[in-house]
Image: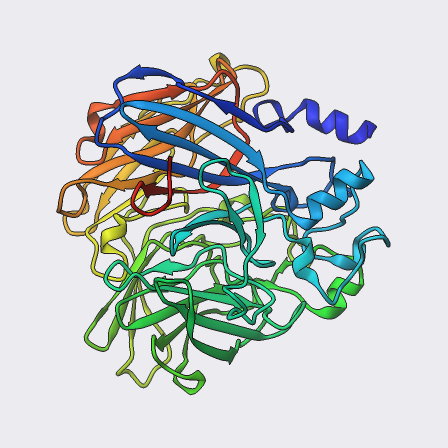
Length: 490
């Protein structure tokens, strides 16, 4: 405990909170738009008990889900731990039982079970709304169904037995035209397996189509993209093996000699229809969107130059290189008529961004003009001195609307002592880009969190309103907006 307490003293704003909470009628600065009737859900992580190993990945911390419920110009906040099998075992034992990220060989003997790795999931990555249900997800296990009003955990969900993979992506894609969801599970048949299952789930929640393919090598497949005709699966660089896990190492290492791959297959295709395009080694983590243009697939993604995660070490023993941990918005063109299995790639803006990006969900699977993500604006310097002694050295302080047609960037600046987490888009009106951006800002100077609401078409005007919380929120990974007609909200 001594080592953990010392490291905790340096975490400052992100120190674990370890409580469930509910606040009615939150304090608001500005005025909440009355057409906001729904909930903004966040999924993230907190250590309920300290990690077993001090160099473990923060991605291994316990899942936490929270919501801001908007109705009649008022906002209620709720936050709860995701009550996974793993968290139940921790609470019974009253100490940490689980070892390295996605390595059951390093667990306490009382819970060690390499044959069922999905029992270790912390469900801490992304909220998903589909078929009238709310889920929390993480790619190492099944999604967990969550009550959309109380945030109580209902339990793991396998789509009434239709989901056969041991794992389920944190980033399924929704088709706004059909209401279907396309999802995948990698390492689908067990740890370090090269099996990838891709499934289509209809709008009622029934798995209606499944394809099973082999991957070129076992790697993190964190996100995907979907067009109205194709499924797009990117990955690169990270490697694992049964031998690595049995040796007691963290699940992933970075191999800079491995090529990048982007798989493309028809949505109604079979395994033989999967085509793997091969390209430069990059960190393929998140995507914005994709669309099909004839027999070309166009993908927009903020991929990193190299290894993004310092806690996933380089397999050649070299130190982590922060100069490679930079994400740029890129356009990829994959020509299905070409005999060459390579892609064309263009960097659209010569400025690093955060790779947690969104589009107007009404344009998902189609050509989208606007991309939204956070970034550090050098013209608006972060005031670390005012932010306090435990504040980070630099932060993402702005949201941007990146116009792929004009290459213009519209900017929202949160403040000199604020850091922005991922934004979500709330559609309004009928045209792409009409709506709001919502996202949480960390106020380091006052050690609290604030929910930002900004007009997505007028980001330079600043925020419309801020919801003020009297404490700091746990770290968010991803968030999603759900209108009142998507869930049984009260």
